Image (cartoon, rainbow, N blue to C red; front, side, top):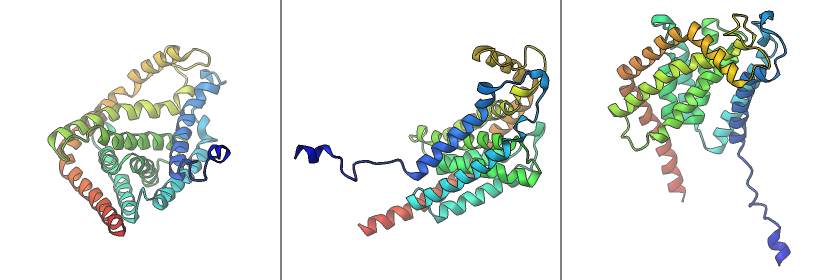
Length: 281
């Protein structure tokens, strides 16, 4: 009897769902893509290897596409998404891709606010997919395909992911209120800065510049962070600050009605599922 109890049953060993494994693999791939030049770089800055990612960039795009497809299928089969959610994902991704062509002052555009509101309304995983797929589509529309693309896709995906996670933190707020929209505007302003700070890392390890703004292997994490701070403040901070202001302004102006509409769609999709399941019981 003791031996039988010591042997776990077939149902007691619960493995992670396929969707969870694909989601974790996607994020690990993104972290590895960004960090491996700092951990394994051997080329000196004076080589000015701007397109060092030209060889691994297409491989990363292929891996991201395969894992996004696996995550989508796993979410559909596991109940995390339904056909209506998938249709909403496709529509939002296409709209975000088109909005990226609408330019605002200092190179800002309307792309970011839709990814933020979509991720906030539909959750972290769908926000991740929305950010990645919409940026990929927008790159095809604008001709922005290159070794930088997978890194921009990951930064956009993490923006959608954190927007979905933000909804959990703001759950006590009534949906669509001014307070909620104001916090989302602050979130959009923060990501206006973060997006540029993250995406610059795709080329900075190979960039040749002055000794106080250039990465060199072996300088240590603290010194690398100090040099990157100097590089970022001198190069793209001004542009990113304008994008930050534009993100906040667009969310404050248009966020309320669109957010309420997206939340109604989300609740309607899942209300139908809950009603169907309760009827089956």
